[in-house]
Image (cartoon, rainbow, N blue to C red):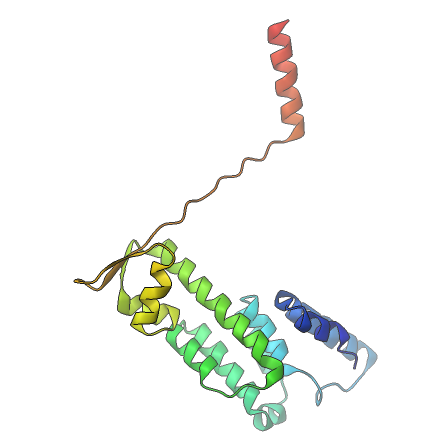
Length: 197
């Protein structure tokens, strides 16, 4: 099995492509009748789904993995724990599952990138959902202790009220991009020209 595309995507940190590349390779192997199951990068494939926030595909992929692989690959079971925590929205549990296993070198870069991406998603969720939040709750969502969470959010403009242990969320300005259709511009130009003459 030729994993050159996958290796290249990992090397260039194109993690958003991992799931699609693995899906394509799996379909190719199935079409050619190649027995790939013993050498398949299950953990990387699974993390590829999690990286693009496709938990449903991850669940179906888990069901398709032979039980012998699940029994003999503890890292595969560990990545499944991350997916389970995502599924039930146990935010702190996601971070605990990530940090609670000694991952192989091949997976570490993708896992660190996923962890950072997940933290950014949680931060954006907090920004969109709250105007104030307790330091404790913010730490829970961000997978940090309270001091780390305070530092993380204050660097992003949030205000800490030490007395109440609350954070005031800094809403991000939403840039509105106007798209101008060239045909509309042409009609407007003709209209203005007509008014002037």
